[in-house]
Length: 281
Image 1 (tube, one colour):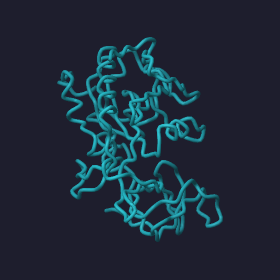
Image 2 (tube, rainbow, N blue to C red; image 1 turned 45 degrees about the horizontal axis):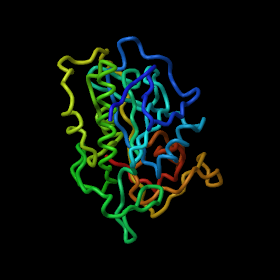
Image 3 (cartoon, rainbow, N blue to C red; image 1 turned 60 degrees about the vertical axis):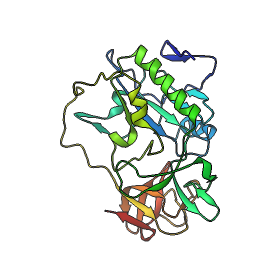
C-alpha cells in the first residue's frame, strides 16, 4: 500500500484526522524533522489514547497513533513540533521534540503475571498469545510485555518509508534510547533494529546540537509495593483521586517529595504515600 504525505499530512483512505488544538510547539525549521521517535501508549485502547492526548490537562502530544488493527490517527501535521519525548537526549542533542516526529503505538507496555492473567498497570488483562517475555535493552532481568501485532509492524514500516521519502530522516529511535532509565518504550517486544534495517543509513555524522553538561539528570524511579495504591491530586489523604489505582510492581517516575508524600508520574501525575514506593537505585 502506497503512503503519500500531502501538506504534511498522511494521505490515504485509512487515515483518520483528529488534529489537536493548542498542543504543538511551533514549526520545525526548514531542515527538520530528521528523526522518528517510536513509543508505546501504555493505555487500554486507541480510543483512550486519543482522549488522553485530546485532554487540555495533558501536556503531551504526538504526530500519529497506530492501532493494533493498523488504524492510524494523525494528531499533528509533521511540520509542527509535538511534546512526546519529554526530557531527552541523543548524542549531542537535547530536547528531541525539537528534531523528531513522534509515533505512538497502541500497546500496554510492561505486564505483571497474575493468577488471572497478564495485567497492565491500570488493571486490564491480556491473553498469553499477546504476551512477549524478554529483557529490555537497558535491563538485565526479563519481564512480560504486551506484544505488537504484525499489522502494526507493517503499518509503521510503511509510514517510516513515506517519511523517509518526504523528509531528510536520518534516525529512527525508541523513546527508551533518548530517555534511558526514565522510559522503556517501545520495549523489547518491538523489533526496533529490524525496522531500522529496512532503510538506508543516513546517520554517518553525529547530529548537530550543543553538548550541554548542565542538562538535569533523569528523575528517580520506584515501584509500587502494595497490591493497589491510590494516586491523588495533592499530598493529602483526602485529595481527589487521579484515575485508577496503581498496581503492585508498577514502575513510576519520582518528580518530587513533600513530607511523607512523593509526586510520581505514570500516564498521569499525582501524589502517593512515600512508604508504599520502593526506590530503584
